[in-house]
Image (cartoon, rainbow, N blue to C red; front, top):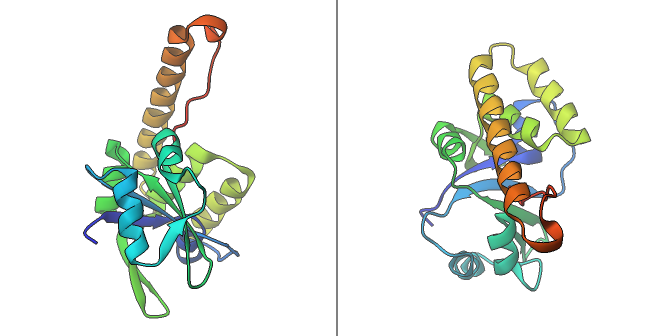
Length: 178
């Protein structure tokens, strides 16, 4: 398809750390100038369909395109990457192979950065697993990007707090960032 991408989530976790069960495939794609509508049309050629009625609008608002493969029912979550970190993560990806299918996965460092930013319960377990398996990590990169992304999120929240009119004025509103 020519769309640059990198696999993250449970599939990457199984390769980078201690395997765990996952029910979907997560990836970051650099869609460049393609609209969510164009991405959905292209996905249909490969037997993927949207998981929700308003998939394109949802993707625009939340930066994630939710698909399902028609043949096997596997959900696929495509994060629409566009920030420098995501571009670097795609460029730095390593090649992996599972059951004869080759694909790019995030480096352990970039995987950890993504997990720290999401920081759900399972993310903490995944981070610990990758740290246990990968003893030589570029922690300077991890610290740099976590601090930079956290500062950017804080700035976005401050902008949202200061710029919402009416009943939202002066209140923090969590913007969709993933």
